[in-house]
Length: 486
Ligand SMILES: [Zn+2]
Image (tube, rainbow, N blue to C red; front, side, top):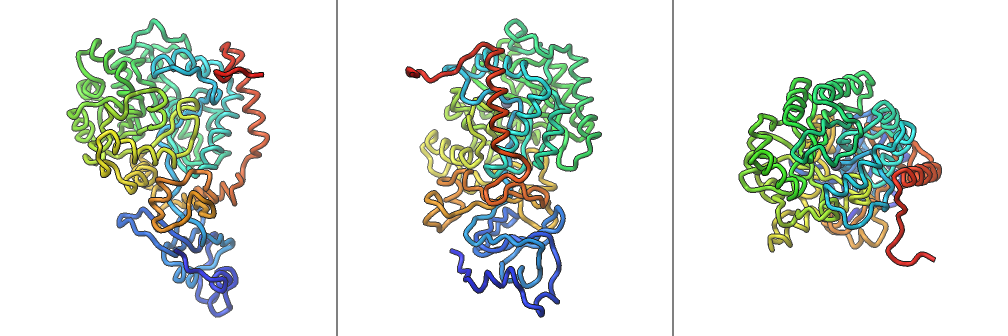
């Protein structure tokens, strides 16, 4: 527990002249409380502090030492908080669709075809802009500072919204050629592209993101997968990501149904087939991966590919993650793994704390092994390893000198955090992202005392409610509870 006293606190904010003479001016100090650095030694300070200058972390250490050496334009008293690297969401679609409106009973392929694709297809650029603002606001509110967008429409509008939000991300355009193992017949005629046009869209996506020139926004080569893309497109995208030093992002091994379709079409399971065509390498981020065999774990590990696990999405869509998922094996093999929340309706939340809890607990029950995945591994997936999965670990994922200042401070002044002895256990098993109090990206304060600094939350909620109603009217769905509504 922090042993900070009232006198110590005054010292942080009002240092004497003698101390000032020996100190360095910085922009921001986070002073006091538990500090979980996630550095290479995984050091945790009981009473830590972080100094930030511009976008960078310039000092990390015991509070007593840091406040002697630095004075700041603003000091935030974090003595009753737990400070961690900003959380990473490895799979979050900005192509939202009305939250809570997806009809019950859908599994991966049917939910996509009957609800999610029609919602995506109905969005205008202006609506997409608003949804992107809302989705990023929600992530920031729950402690997320970086995420991967696995393929969006209206990329220009999305880039404007991302820049406004201040969040860090990778993003690329929604792309498919509708020539995969699942066949063409039941896909909507939305953004129908032949393979060459799809590859050109991906190239232009990289150019567009790079020309936009926001240092927080990196490009991704994004195809849908899930049996909707040809081998030519998959391989072309993989090569493009390698040549351009980007990240090739696709949905893979998302369900037993997808595995069955690929076995029927190619005589190989999805990962086996990606390996066979030469599309599996260290520039690949595979989303979902809920249905694997042991030999596919080896293929992924040997290739250097990365993964996003989406536990709440897997559960809601009945993917079989507890039976056919290989999470402990993938972690043991050293595969960089992020946690994600997927699209709006397949998690109904964007809280990586809840994802950590599921990622730590589900494999234990599945294997009857309380050591299957540890709380520490769950926090690694949500921070330092997640950043590696997104190829963002050169700048984010840990609180250490030289990294960008992407930091989340969780208030512990509530029942879910107290009593507090082991902050990793409290964070992974007990807390929700609602306790995020302060969120900083590249030194910018995006959440200040639980208030978003860059958007008007009320206005945004009203705007999204209106768009939801328009989308639902367009696709002809009236979502209501199963019980009588009077
Ligand atoms: Zn997805």
